[in-house]
Length: 209
Image (cartoon, rainbow, N blue to C red):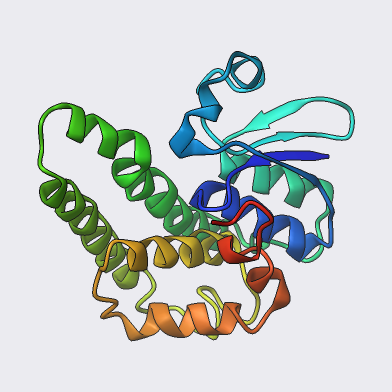
C-alpha cells in the first residue's frame, strides 16, 4: 500500500493511526500542502479533489477520504475492530467521528482559511475563525461523549471516534484553543499510551518541519 499524505494533515494522521492499530505498513509519499503539491497534475490524477490522504491499495485501487479509508482497513483486517459490533453503538461512534471529520476539520482547514485570506480577512480574524469553529465543535463532541465509559471514547479500546479525536485536539493546540474538556483530554491521554497513536503523530513523520 502507498499512503499519500502530509505530516500535519489531520486527515492523514487519522489513517496513520488506523494503519498502526492494524499492524499494517504503507509506503509514505508526502505532498507539502503549503507549497500546493497536492494540486500537481500527477496527484490530481489520483485524487481529483486535490486533498490528502489518498491510499493506493495492494491491488492498485485508489481510496480517498480518511474515514472511508479507515473503514476499508477495518473491513479487510477486522482485528482490532475500529467499530463496535452493536449497530446502535456503531452509529454513535460514526457520529462522533463524522462530527469531527465533516463538521469541524473541513471548516477550519488550510483551504478554507486561505479563502478567507483571499476575501480580505485579516490574519487575526482568520485565526479567530478557526479557533471558534474548533471550540464549538469540540464542545459538542464532549457532550456527545458525556455518557460513555472510558478510558477511550467508547469503552476499553480505541475506535474510529478516538482516531478522529486525537488529531483534532492536536489541531486545537495549533490554533491556541483552550482545552477545557477533561473527558476529551483523558481520552487523548489513554490513546497516547499506545505506540499506534504516538508514532502516527506529525512530529514523528519523516516530512515533519
